Amino acid sequence: MIDAEFRSEEKFSKLSLAYEGKEEGELVCSTVDHITSKYEKKPETYTCNISNNREVLVIEYQDDNNRESGAIFEEIIKTLNITECD
Image 1: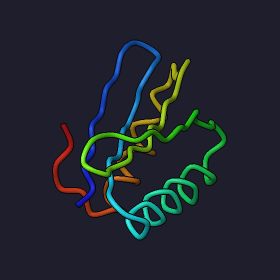
Image 2: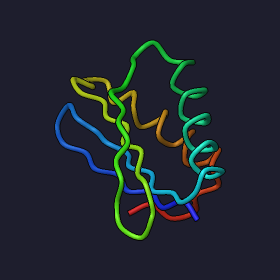
Image 3: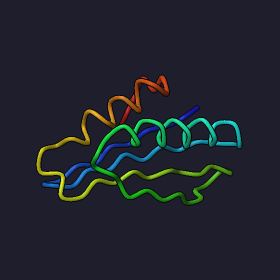
Image 4: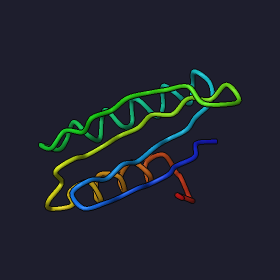
């Protein structure tokens, strides 16, 4: 199961997607790559290990004056069929 967490401040927004296993990891990474490649504004991304053999992909937009990231994050969440985002 993929877990999502969203954080936002003035001109900054971040979506974290936690997943487990190779298949979920490939799904998350390929979905994020595909969706973010359609937009001119590019995020900073990084992956790190968390507890219980899980990893998290973090997608960050800085200097997002027009809040473009909201539509991008929404598309990612819908495509991955995530029904709850903290």
